[in-house]
Length: 228
Image (spheres, rainbow, N blue to C red):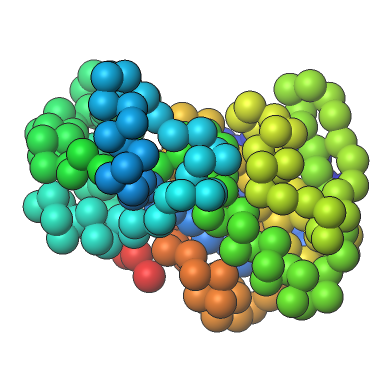
C-alpha cells in the first residue's frame, strides 16, 4: 500500500516520488463536450455542470490542444493558468485574467471545464481498460483525509466507483506498484508516476494528453513546460 504524497511546491516532482518510481507525468483532464440535447434540457439552469455519470454516458473528451486552437491560447501552460485563474486558485499577483477572459469568452456553450481536483472519468475509464489488458487485476487506494485504504478488483470497478472513493486527495496503484496516479488539489490535472521507462508509450496507449516530468518539473509546472 502506498500512502498519499504531499508534494512540496519548491522541489521537483521526481525528487519527491517514492524510491521505487523513477518516471512521472502530468495528465491533462480533458474538457467535456455534451450533446446539444443535454444542454437544451437544462437551458434554464444557469451554471449547471454534468455529473460524472452523465459525462461518462453522454460526454466526449476535448483535448487542451483543441481548446488552444479554438480559443486563441498558445500553450498548455496558458490553458492551465486560464483555468486556475477562473477558479481563483492563484494569488492575485500570479493570476492571468487576460488568459481567463480569452478562454471563457471563446468557450463554446456545449464545452464544459475539465474535472477539478478529481481525476477525469475519461482518464479513469482509459486506465481501467489498459490495466485490464495488461493483466492487472487489482488496485490499491489510499485516502488520507478520511484515513481509508483498500483494494479494488478491476473487473468489478468502474470510473464512477473510483470517483466516489474521495472528494480530493486520493492515490491509486497496482498491487506490484509499477503504476500510480494521484489527484492534485485545485487542479485540472492528475500526477501519474511509474517504474516503466516507456512512460510516453504507456500514456499514449491510454489516450492521455500529458507532459513528462524532467528533473526541473514542479507542481507549478505551468510556468514553463513542453507538452507531448
